[in-house]
Length: 329
Image (cartoon, rainbow, N blue to C red; front, side):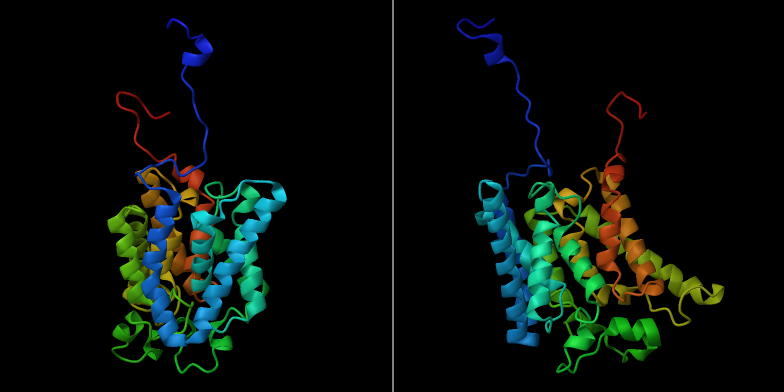
């Protein structure tokens, strides 16, 4: 025993902490800063397209999330972590799922529920089993579906919702050569999630910076393409799905598929950390996205798909290689 030290002083100490456990030299503040940088192109595109309404929704959602977290921590006597930027990013992510014409009370209610039900009741950042913005989005979508419908609240816009047209009229209802317009945000949808090119640029930035791993977005998009291709090729002949199922690439160019794959499915504490689990998680999310779009009552299935898939994250984390020299039980 070391002279002058007791066993209690020199014994190894183990710390139990909350996920994510993977460490890349990032602090929470640095990660949130990179998230805001990645979201900036889509936010700018949304403001360019919708004007002051887009800024109103984003500012209100971010402000309510920050205020809610601050009041919650103060009420429970916890040390305030409001300056780490996580509440601000959560508010912007939630705002991206809302239509530009969403009423103020819906934005405020959804933002508060995003923080409280999505994260704080489980212990705060890193403890949440589900992606917080998706929790708030699901609560608002189920409670007030009309106010969450971009077609119903954006009456002044000349744009059309391609998800509605494909679901009820078939993909042939879209104009020829509309892919480029869809890519550049020429569609009604979530405030920022429908800005496909800008969201994709932000997602690639996150990959380059190492904020997210590539496995989940790649598997999610692959799951969408594979499932979409199956329904497109074999669905009509087998009488499954719509008679005019869209080509698989249209599932990527419409709705929030790209946004969800890069920014929400990769949420650290609600997604797997094992590589095998990441691929299985992403593939299932992509499969459910197409399935909900075709057979569900909600045109955009991506948010619900990731929300449902996140429930299986503990099981997905069991899909990993055996230790060297050992066997899987």
